Image 1 (spheres, rainbow, N blue to C red):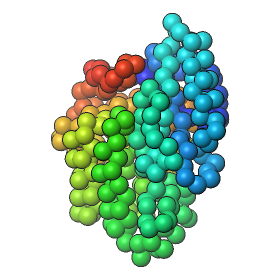
Image 2 (spheres, rainbow, N blue to C red; image 1 turned 180 degrees about the horizontal axis):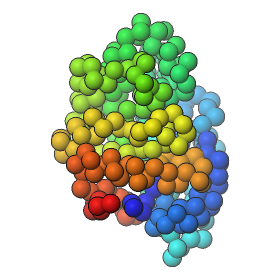
Image 3 (cartoon, rainbow, N blue to C red; image 1 turned 90 degrees about the vertical axis):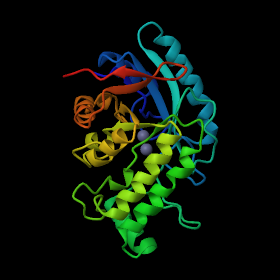
Image 4 (tube, protein in one colour; image 1 turned 60 degrees about the vertical axis):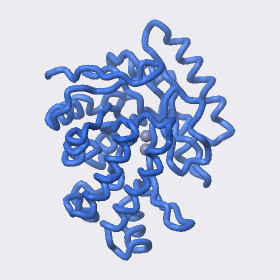
Length: 273
Ligand SMILES: [Zn+2]
Ligand SMILES: [Zn+2]
């Protein structure tokens, strides 16, 4: 099994356990390293991110936990930085770049709130044209690709979170696919690593990870790289779906998973089952 999880949340944002509890769970699950990836502050008040005033506390506590577990499990202090975050992605060991919104004029609707909000967003801003929403969503990755601090692309096709049954989006439609592929090409050209993220499975929204098999295959064919993470919001989900994610990676033709070594990203062999 892959032995690192860089995408985890805690009581500093919308997670349920402390940093120390998350590290303890990671060690108990057999991981050799864990990264904390706090949701960075947004320009509006939000219940799912840390606020700017508490960022120094987060960094200090991560440092304490890192020292506490020295010699037992490596601990990294990262961030899940949103493209529209109110802060710059600096001061972290590594950065996962995510896009949780579609910017439409002054509006910034979330794509991962609920089925109802997805429906409302599509009718209010896109006249029900889900392909147009997908084009607007994926187009934002061109900006993300230009952010040098971002190493990993978080849950690339997040907009399908509530849509495994394809009630809203048709990921096989030429417009959806073209928009996704353009974003993939920009991100690969910029050297970003795509995560296979099992977070929507542990929370009961999906049965398969992001990105979809079709997009992962395209990423592999275009020379892209991957890592695996669980986007865990609870200690018990620390390695949730790792085996499934590895199997998916293997079946899409990947032979390596990339991991953070404290200074940069290096490939490790994706072992046979
Ligand atoms: Zn996210
Ligand atoms: Zn996350």
